[in-house]
Length: 102
Image (cartoon, rainbow, N blue to C red; front, top):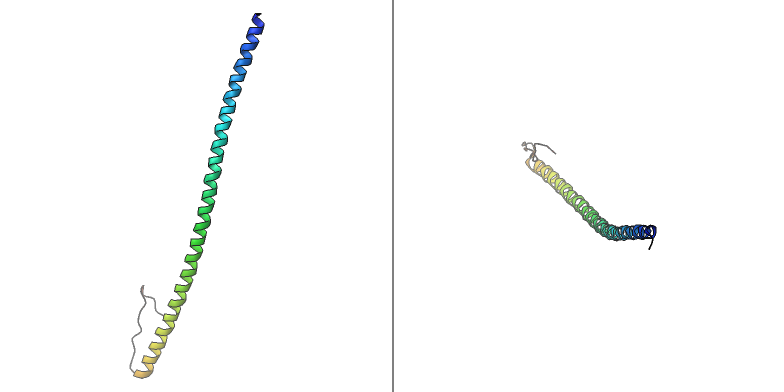
């Protein structure tokens, strides 16, 4: 076999080996990309769940605030009743935590 043909075959074999390496790397990268897609999907699902939880927490906080407003109104009514009962006797107004008055 002429030397030129041997060199060409050797070059072709080297190219085929490099092509195999490229295919192996491509397969690995495709697998990694698929894993990243799966992770991203799970993160989106978790984010949706967290948004749902946060929305429920806002709703619960609004309900709690409404109940607190009702208690404030009841407290104000009780103070008014006490003032009416006591007449001119001074009634000490209760302070809220933090020093705020209502």
